Length: 203
Picture 1: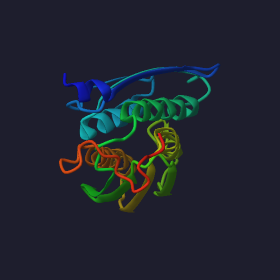
Picture 2: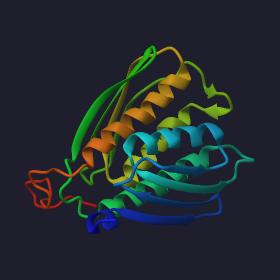
Picture 3: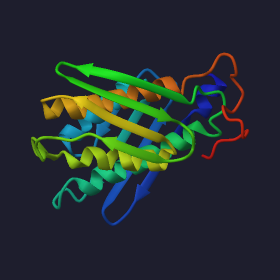
Picture 4: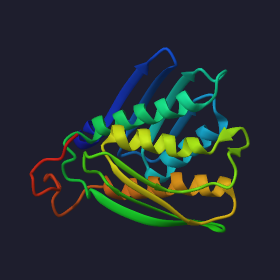
């Protein structure tokens, strides 16, 4: 592992009365994922996030699933975001900006992001059903809201069209993953510079 790779790794744990979550990330990985949240569909989406961003990611979550999935999903977003922010550090040498239109069968979704240190979410995604299996579709937004806030990422997600709710959710995770991969890649023309005229990015 190179010195830069070692610096771009982090482990974060968080425990509340509702959830107990631990996350490890390695930004310069191969997309190796190991997810165990107790929510099957969510694990599947997190696998997509890891695989297509090439961020190695391990997630362990225990939550009050006897109530519903909300706290587990939201708090996992918080901890993954915190781990990403810690691994990014000063955000030195990264490309910072990226966007992608991602297709999956009949569905097309765009993700655009700025790894700026300034959290903001713009969400233009709707679902035709409140559930995908037993998973609440509104939790897709809740996850990305928590992730963007705690990672310090400005994130815009727009579903252009789609009929299958599973595909819509999956393209959101895959599109964000691919955009994140591009944005945190090293900029070969300024590998040691903070990509801002201010000379720093909030982290």
